[in-house]
Length: 305
Image (cartoon, rainbow, N blue to C red):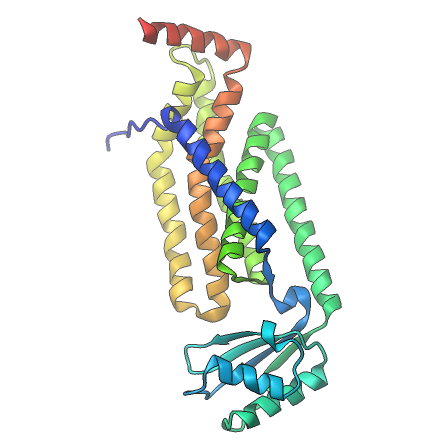
């Protein structure tokens, strides 16, 4: 198979601008709209109502108000594929939540059903939030240390920057879309770190191999050559990763769909950041070293003739 000859490095300014715009939009969305956290983080109640064909979202909200559920204006009422509803409210008392469920079922004149209610106290939500942040921070530090030891500190810093880029974009999409952040979302974000890092390390490993004894081209040109050498592997790996995630999104049900959505957004961001952010940034940084500066001047002069 013929090797590709795409000039990634020649387009690096456009990649940097695109990344800057995406990150800026994500940060603005996070600041202005914020994230919508599920009950696992905030505490509250989830009710699953079945057999509600013909019932509207507003009917359910009205029934919640009549049942005395607090803050019904901010309750999340999500229709399900089987003609029911998943309702999330701020109620954190188990007894009151069960009573409200029974009152809603009676008010909507639905068939008698077992109370499918999950209640989580605010203390549990606080613990989940803290544990998630700790897991994310530990992952980033461990990645930074490992790549610094295995490769070099410049690679590690650029790789972590690419990871932050990917996670920020995913969180920005959640802020813009208003989707709930659940433990599945956090699990997906941590998984994205691994996938994103794998793509970046594949390219960095080839760059390091090609940089040994480099004399016939500049570091920037060698980086571009390295990306093209592993491009088909990168594409095939990305497709293999995305296909099962899309299957989960379309056929996995509500619980797995949330995980799959975050994974799909993260995989796309990670695929882009590997060739559009991490590799160009690393090449720009390395070309400031005296050895590679000399090569750059030499081949820039040849190109100008």
